[in-house]
Length: 588
Image (cartoon, rainbow, N blue to C red; front, top):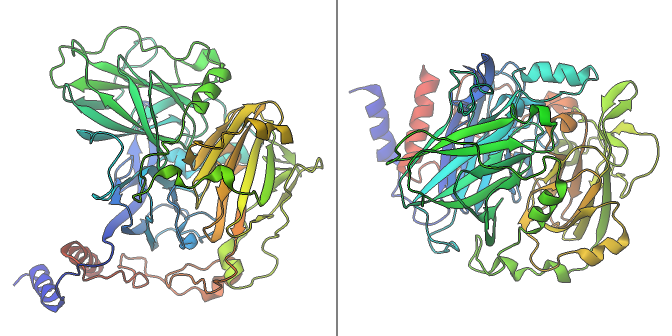
């Protein structure tokens, strides 16, 4: 009898009847490695997962448990973070340098977390320095449970699009540029699903570029989930002759509004319903073009895919659909952002209206005004700051330092307003109040649009305007249906205000999503301690580094299923096959 069949029979004989209770588990086995690609016609190494660029989707349902075994086949340490997944009670799975030691090259590590009380469109990506500029990203789709209706007709199909600016230089070369005190300059193009633009104009797009083609059926309605996974460029998304009905952003159902185009900023995710209601005399352009950049590079920074009806009569033709009138018109974009509202009558992950939590009636506990400035020299090195502090990651992650009482790793003294002092490099973090209500105002004194993301939470976007924020600005706040999300844009010379209920204990990363300024230090962590629960523990497979390196046990460089994550391995046939495959690879 073949070995694999014998093993399977033994496993089935040993297992009890499938469990009917408890939340299901989804298992993924990923190898992160370099793969060769040439999205803009220039051959380069990109980061793929299981040989795919973009990486495979993570498609689960509310409250499922997710187990992702990651083998790092890169030549440097790696972490994956789950952009928008709140990691309720599992802050150590967050996958940023404040919560995890990076996975060494050649090692594997198993992430285990639950997508607790969440639905919507998110994505994962490598959080280690500038890796996302080389790829490594993929979709996270969290579906509703069957008993919870969605607030629109069930679509005929689901389509994921990754849009983002792209450099032909590799991430290591980009790092060297920043380390040398140089800004990155204009990107080389815009990709859609890891592919270059369709040749809509021979003078702009060279021949031979492979582009994305989206196949659809006439008369059907599709849910387009669009993620800006780029380095630093805001993009305007549109589909020729088609309306975009906005229905969801980063886990919150929105008031349903039609847009002909929408600005999507770095790190943001949106869902649209798009009905195939055209006569299909030709294919149609799908466009993601750069915003707020020099007019001389706009054509180069335009990604184009093709929407292909099954009954199409020919290739796409004519000019690309129009972008907003003025390339530099932030007023258009800020008004558009203000128009995005929460659907307060729709159920989210639970069978109650999203707006049943009346954030406008809660007393604010802490206020933080976070001011950013253009990158500047600190001790001779180019750095970016929040409130004159440029964050530097310690060799011992913050979570480990807290749990093991390692002194001197960080300070809980981050200022709650700009200090008007010389900037400095430091590991200073915010001391949040558990179950407090924090107001955060982002004041952008830099010259480019910045996107900010908070791990562990969805926050309420309550205000956005030009000029300097003052106490009187609160009079303009939306206290009823400000959308709840995890990434928000802040325009240059303007401010954005958010409110967040700190009910998720942990140490959470608050960062700019623009990779260049993030790399240069524009981030901070918020420490949220539950005083009634001091029993927080790390998983058994935690990696130790820095001051705790001596605690590290030797790990195999070959793939084995992590014994540190015993997640009901006999629950169903999927888990049996997962363990069987794991054991088979281990035998090889």
